[in-house]
Image (cartoon, rainbow, N blue to C red; front, side, top):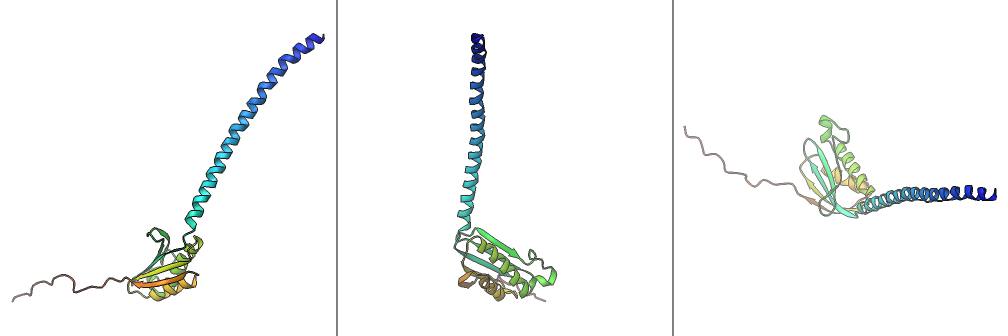
Length: 167
């Protein structure tokens, strides 16, 4: 009988032994998948942190008689944050006011500050009501202004006039 017991135990032991490595293989595969996911998440987080640290840039303020647009870019010109009077919720004739320009500039500046920006060079274009108020709003949002440049295009006599009419 002791031989029968050992014979019965012997087949049971080998069948239990392969189950353990199979379980560990499955666990290894699952853990490898988890490691890959964790590594991918860490890489994405590292990329995000690299994109967030942009210390200085250029703020473009385009103020027309109908709207105000503010774009904040990095030194190369890639847009980091932008806003417009329509995006801020203003409609119709309220888009061209100085108050709308203030709200637009604050919105864009907050987005840029969240991405790590703390110094900008401001380039103003156009003759609208929101020129100065947009610059003040950028400064009040916590961004230091290093320079303000007016880039408004100036007409210089234009194209050649038509010939005079002979009657």
